Amino acid sequence: MTTTILSLHRDPYDRLVLRNEAGEVFEAVSPVRAFPIQSPLEHISLVLSDGREVAWIEALSDLTEAARALVLEELDGREFMPEIEHISSVSSFSVPCTWRVSTDRGETEFILKGDEDIRRIGSAALLITDNHGIGFLIRDFTAMDKHSRKILDRFL
Image 1: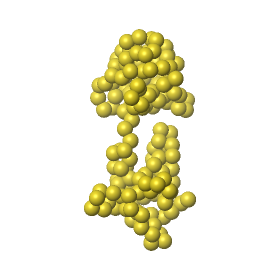
Image 2 (image 1 turned 90 degrees about the vertical axis):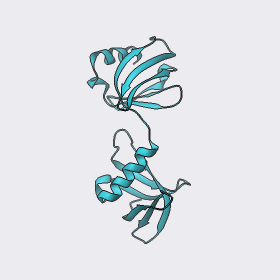
Image 3 (image 1 turned 90 degrees about the horizontal axis):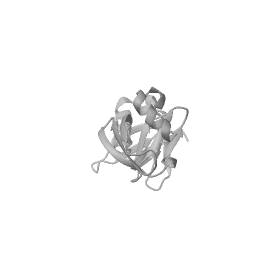
């Protein structure tokens, strides 16, 4: 489904409202990325609260600057996935263990329950899920510092 978006704006309740080329108006639409890690700026669906897709965006660059800003703002508000930049320490190389890391959102620590909570995504990206279900992204583990890679190698 590809729909030309004529307008996208927020209503007084701070919900996104879409008007398509057919003149149909959809209130409370939410953007959903099809490939949030590999293609975060492409292939985005606008869905209603019941999950019904009402528009498809091939690339955010196809939208006006104002519409693009609204979609990114909505995605940033819903998606929380800190990106690990450095691994300071782990409490043990057996699980469960506590990881102390630096992320793009600051320092934190989390508990890794099992080895299966580290998943490869593509050739160099990793998704680490903590004991609360929060996902931590490592976009390219090969580009990390030597200390961080050494810790990761023990778990991969």
